Length: 264
Image (cartoon, rainbow, N blue to C red; front, side, top):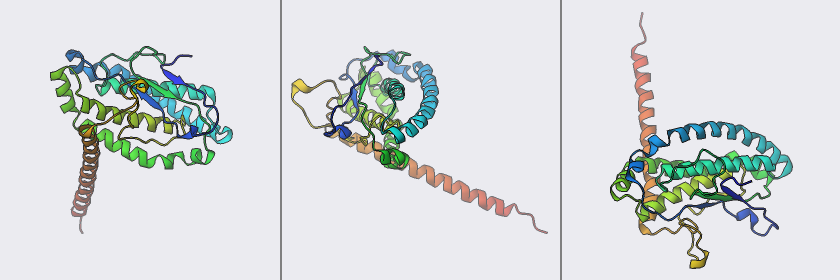
């Protein structure tokens, strides 16, 4: 079954557990300015569909968690469904973050869409499955900070893409790094891989004949690396500000409540 993502059986155990899910996105190219202008408005139906799929995937993941505890792997049907949901979400996210201009299809099957992922069914460590929610907390924090930081300055990227009709190289690479890390975290949460999310700051260079796409390998220059650090700092700053505001609001509420207590 073709689902817009590649599923490969892994034979043997040598290093299989360390194989990371792959994201393929084409190199940055020209984008239609009107689609950039209306990008998130056009994607509203996709967001609704993905929200529904996320709810279904949550319950399927719970079933898969119990199955993986007993079997040491995900059942094939659950693996295919969760892999398809991950591919769908990745396509929508790539369009929303201006990595591609082409509108994502309302389908699990998208073999000709420019954004693809590759996941491989691999045996799972039962102990890691048991504690998956705890293990993924550090990566979830990093991913949350990255996405918060990206969205904090996404309007700048949007303006640049609107004016230039494309996303400049450093902005593309930094955004792709965030999208790939988020995809790998979701794959880990869905039990599609035993490999912990990593390589946020890109890959090592490979010979030209081994280059598959703009993100395989994902190469970051200094400007892109600085942008990723900026995302993290902005996300952290936003979290600190929100926490401070919430704490201050609680104090004000307590003080007000204390003043309002009637006296005999």
